[in-house]
Length: 466
Image 1: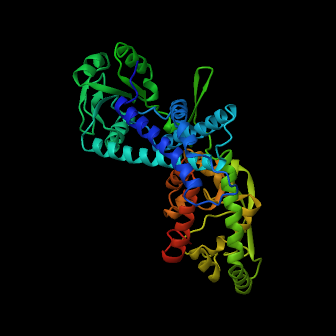
Image 2 (image 1 turned 135 degrees about the vertical axis):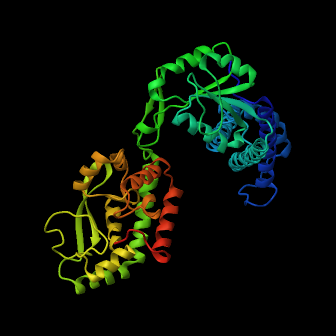
Image 3 (image 1 turned 90 degrees about the horizontal axis):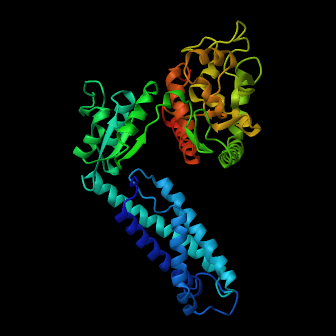
């Protein structure tokens, strides 16, 4: 059986988890009934000895709950996000089990306030303790303590990327010995090719290897079977690095269906609660923005009308979520007859601009009416910038993964724009940044982009703004 856990670390975490749980159980009683932090609405105060008497049962239930929640699946590649979810599951399950056992035993002296304090306090304490422990462990590993050895099967692009990644995440304590390849040669990274696939058992024993990473291109996946066969008599940890990133426009997902592993290549991370949170942010912030800048909107509208004949607003068909079209609003910055000869991309010193329109484009103020598009649900505050259908059709044929941008709502601003990739700049770079945003989206990322957008509008010259 492959050993994926570290027994000393598991014992360390278990000791601290149970100790903090016991402290949290008694501390919650003290905060609720002795510290005068919360007013008491009843005269009867449970006797402290009753809580002390239930402490062994609480600790036992904590041990069972934490194990069931996966809090002790300790391995070198475990991320803090996984740790956080596991602790939340464990403390939540513990609270439910404690309340259930109290109900069965008809122990009505336990307070709901104490349970809330206990659950919240234990969750915070365990997370903080684990964060401190992992920080210490990772610092020691990055300095060469508690190292383990790894081999990478393959010498191509994916294998070299795996080698670079393992060097960068030195906190894992995994040190790459070299590469395994049937053909001769040496990787550009400087690590040697130490042997062939057939020699893997001897290499594992010679270099005391604990991890083998299979990093082969798609056309060599038959060799992965040879790796497993070669390592069948060892207990080394084997991981397959799937070479599907080039096929994927969005984040990868994995699902198990009746024992069959399914990898999703084109699934948007914006679903379920994520959609609700993003939409709520859009509505609230767009309403606040409209109210705050209403005088500015009125002033710009008046100046557009005074400086050139034609409508104040310019409505243009753009492609949004799932490629559906909508009419995007902008303050008109070009002459009313600017597209008499058909759609055109803007260019430096575009002769179609009005003098006030040139100012609006440089300052991005022409985009402000899109706040109403956000309220109507056609756009989001942050997302890939929408393009006109005629250009979408053209770019989708020449730019890889271009259509993946439409897996989410188009935005007033985006990660590509705050990094200077806007206007008539590199489309490939713009798509690259847009897909990065889609893959790594979270509410704080949106807030960061909005802050950078406002900051650069006010204090920095905008690239490709014309």
